[in-house]
Length: 413
Image (cartoon, rainbow, N blue to C red; front, side):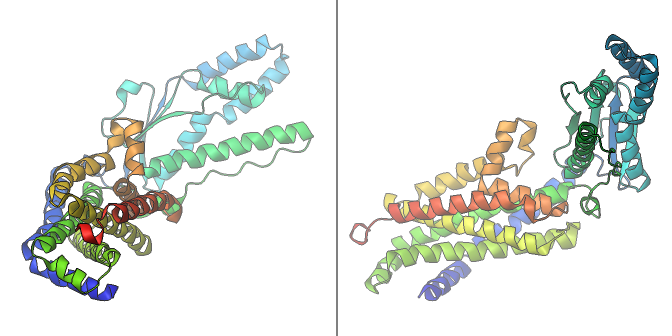
């Protein structure tokens, strides 16, 4: 019986050709306009020769840091022979130099173009990532390594939020560095040999093919998650039309359960959203070269987003029937979609405003889906899209429950 309701919905949708064309073509047009107009702005360094421009700010020379550390050792009462030994070891394990060496190895692989500077004011404007080592950083880390002082802040990094590769490089290096320091400390306590240091490696899966999220990538995801929301308002409007033309009353005389009618709207929303997303992703892939590293994960994200649309269509339909007008749908189409799209980051990266705004956006189903799509475009695995399922599952359950509670009883319709 649900299949019959879906067939009815499909026939109803095919009669609304102008609205369908708008839902399918408008996001494609906006992706073309926004992607072209803002090309190179979404991802600094994207317009270059395929390398990311990054900068390392080291505010204090190595010899100055060594002299300061020697003063610390003298205050600790270290004998000259031990001071000389520790200074040699300190120079060998200087974190800024080790980190810079690792970045330069990536530069040799064609991944990064690294600038080493001593003043944050000289950082290039188009730098995709900036790592800043403040004055006294080396001395703090040496005290923690050799004198077991309080652990200092490891590094201050300003990272372009569109480039997960920069965060991946930072995390890979410092996670291994912390492990090595912990292993050396435990070995010293147990009187066993210090384990041989493991060479730092970066997860190359995140570096291959998609090192940069382009403006076309960004707005493909942004416009897709935005315009599928209009699908829910479109279906709710057709439901109100069915009420005005007495189609719904004829269904009731056929003993069609109310829940089945609402479920039909939700199922139609899922189908139409999947078609819409398929058109958008296919067009962007063929015309603008947008690449989804995992078609399987992309399909899962699209299905989750389509379920969101279906549940939202059910809720809007129920509210329309409760109010006996289309005011709820009109309000959501004019203001609700815009607010959700803004918070979800469809227009620009809201994390530039504040972390609170970014957190709210990630909690919304459209924002979670968008971040998941961008992560897949960047080569991320399934572990990074788990939060999306939590947001979508909670949203769908909430909308479906509310729809069943709000939809009027048979005698009230």
